[in-house]
Image 1 (tube, rainbow, N blue to C red):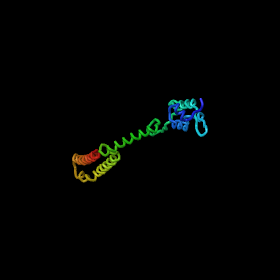
Image 2: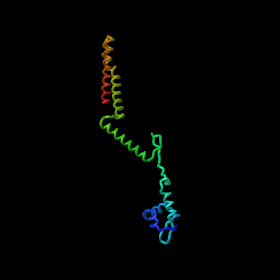
Image 3: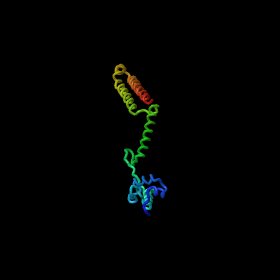
Image 4: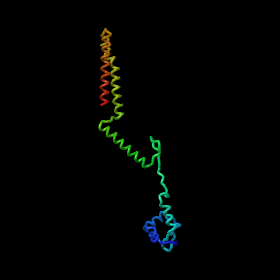
Amino acid sequence: MAHVSIPAFAKIVERSPEYIRRLMSTGVIPKGCIKRVGKRWHVDPVRAKKAMQKNLSPQHRKKTKTKTQKYPGIDKEVSYSQARSLNEQFKVAQARIQLGITMDKYILKSKVKDEIFSASRLCRDSLLSIPDRIAPLVAAENDPHRCKNILDKEITATIEDFLKMLNAVHR
């Protein structure tokens, strides 16, 4: 069949001439199917139809490769859309944690660590000061049983103070 004008070919394939021109410019209809006649372009309808069927059918389209990237903590490669999804899930988890912290549902590890350290330091200092505090009391006593009671009383008071400080950290 002889070459026909673009509007005539558009009528044959029931498309607009603009669509046919776009297919020509993108290479769906290859240059081998096109011929310039004067100022106008003409199309070989048989070859152009075959080219359109080949290049426009889904089985012949080139599949685009998705870029994948390895992320720490994830064993498999992740595409861009999966990475965005993981990022949004991470943001939601962070927001939940922040909400829990503001509602006093969660406490910060560093805050607990600091408070336990200071409570432990006070307990240690108190235990180390027991001998200096009760040495005169024990020296004045002759009864070993009374000496033991004085020591027990001081040590028990120090430990109870330490437990009160730990309970304050817990709340």
